[in-house]
Image (cartoon, rainbow, N blue to C red):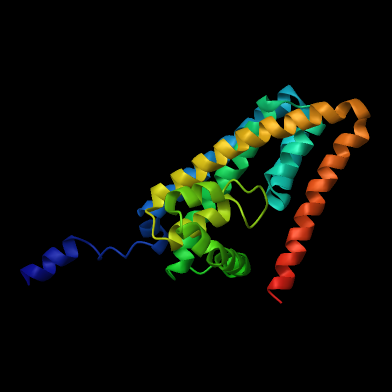
Length: 234
């Protein structure tokens, strides 16, 4: 009787927390929170840039889109060809690739552990896993240094996103994987900025068509690599 009174006084039993609450308490969940915060900070910056220069905002969007589709080499080439310098081109591309890594890595881990199912991302996650497994042995041979070097490649399915997946497959701790991938990405991007800006400066004397040609060459290289990759997979 007394036990029943105490039970009724304490109210109904608390329902279990949703799965996502538990996931956000994990290390990967904290990385996901960081990715969301970095993404929001970038969108706020875009809003500020919109008041300062609509043209810069347009370039912000173009570089973000091309980085996601074609990689940093094409994105940075477009930025420099548009007349912008390192102050805009480098931070925008760093932001895009940081968000990609910080959002992708935890989602990939959740998917691999069968904790969450992403029907709309299933094909993309599967392709990324296949790409990571394809490069896994090459990177494993050199360990952390191999992963650091791998993310220097500027094209889709060879850079930081796949690098993050490889870090997980190699068994590296989550924060170590993310730190290696982002550090390698930032250093690689600085090197690419120096190379591409110098190249754009030298070819600009030949006319606007020369800078457009550089962008076209990088796009063709990407498409050729994509085509060869599809043929290899049958």
